Image (cartoon, rainbow, N blue to C red; front, side):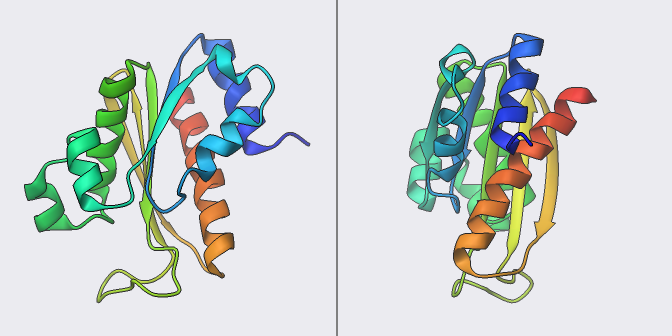
Length: 157
């Protein structure tokens, strides 16, 4: 059975599309998954790990007003991260993931396991909210897998 990264790579290769990533809670895990796929250099341009709000602003161009109004873990921030990565790398597709992996970091209305993924396909944005459970590592891994599955779904729409 192929991994999510292998399936994502096949989908991108078939469509002749390039990929960029913007990661927060996965901390580079998504990029590691993608580059574990043989031939990923055919479609993967690069990724940005933007863990802090400051990095989200300076590297990807996420607006401070978005971060202040909605927070780092929000659909709005995920959307701006994806668009920022697509612009930064000049890719056809960008995937962004931001969330709370735990065990700390939860706030009212934003529990541990809340993750948003955003997929930008040539300027069209698709956002998904994920409510995950488990320990920090399982949330991070499932966030990465969920982001890649989200990307494949968005490519088919």
